[in-house]
Image 1: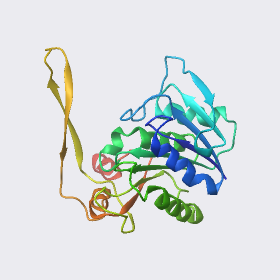
Image 2: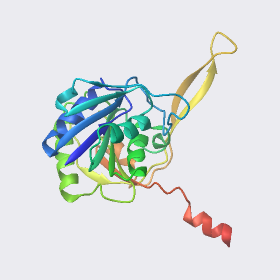
Image 3: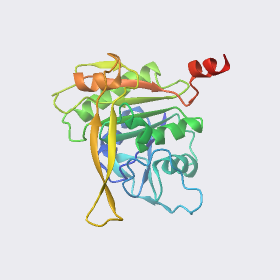
Image 4: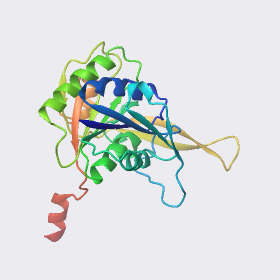
Length: 242
């Protein structure tokens, strides 16, 4: 099995190393990751500028490592091209910070996986509250073993996986979930200069579906959320048509 690992935290990120080592038993693992931290870049791609890349010493026991001076989606696109390998799976992560509910819309980690699916390769995105969780390596191996054996990643979209909040010593189990409603609100606040702003973040909570990724995160479960590439709201579409 040929696996491409990508991320948005950059090629030196701890979560990337954990993921590469956890995937090593399942096949040949290649890495294509951004040169710099690229969180919240969503699905941006570079279309006007040239993209510098370089091969570095294979990191974390990977077969080969490509560093991309671009976005997470750029890293996916270039990894699939430069290595000239028929990849069976792309796995993005492990992101430092959860990507649940509306986080998904901004996430470079999720977008890097989505880009793989756009290009015809099955993909998974993985995130955690932080990458210092003591169980993260062991639980990732266990989870990937179950997913790969059952071929759960084979579908019309991607799987978005999140480990639970850090207050739990270990995950209680795994739940198949839906995208929740919680919003990481970003308010632009004036700084000491009138023409300069900074972001003040807060979380807006909603009544969540019991099967949401937010509920699983809060209750101590690993969430696996199937996400679709199709953005059409079928119900609304039919209502408009009458």
